Image 1 (cartoon, rainbow, N blue to C red):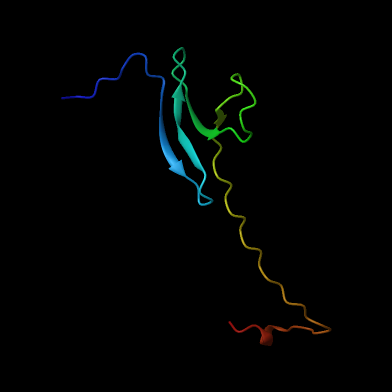
Image 2: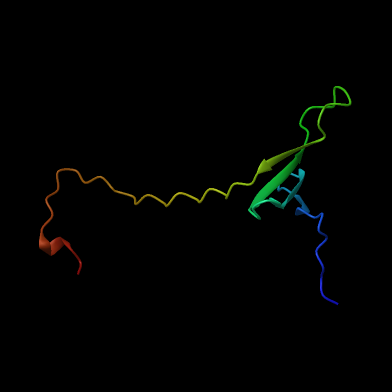
Length: 90
């Protein structure tokens, strides 16, 4: 039997756990008007609830993880040395 999407469904979320032990939700929400998919993450409220109107969850746009910067080449200092073609090993 083929999967039939519920017409009221606008997104999907998966429960995950960070390396620090924080539980959060990750997934995507689709705009019902333009069909744009927006990756999202959902975090529990950081502050204890002050009253019934305080949120339990915060939904944020998901951003790609920043790539690790490329390692910088090491340059060793050369003091008062003159290099010639004979110093190059190839």
